Image 1: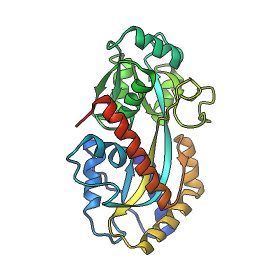
Image 2: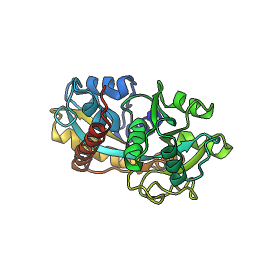
Image 3: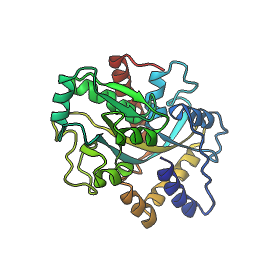
Image 4: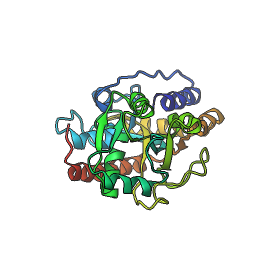
Length: 279
């Protein structure tokens, strides 16, 4: 997320003609940074580079979430979408999603998957997989996606969902085996890898990212920032880096981003309720 954010803000700085500073406020699956921005002055100078976790997942997991993503934030634009890839340790005897599901069904409660923590997108992708495939696998949370993937490569866990970009070097080296990629289409960086849907399971797993402002930000400011973001996403540098990161540029309207947040929030609420999750 940090790399995507810095790529976008670099382009935004060029378009606006003034520096945009990135300040990471990490923790609680994105809740800390999101709460901070939700309480700032609505003057267009403090913005949130948000993602699915704190905008659609955490509010449904944590009844004490100190903000309402719909009430307290103003969408400017969805910036990008990045597919998750389903990875297994090479020792797992499954070469396809269907084989993995059959294996998990034959070992109920004995296989596990790692994630970067409770409530993050790659955790919820695993929970969605459990429901869609009808399997019982155990979630093992780590303090970040990088340690979770290190655990997978060490054979401490059997599988995980992660972003395609950080997984690619390990897929190519054979340290990890990829079974399928989320999203609506195959990735040009790994064209032989089927999608989840092509593998016979009708659910989508991808992360999404966007820019938001505090509640009360004037429409004129939102319009200006949206126009600048769209121009930034069209610059050659941003397009080149997004392609390298296996990230799809979006640049939709504020209303389209608002609709996405509401739709995703409703979807994850159903998954969370079905799985009996809470924070």
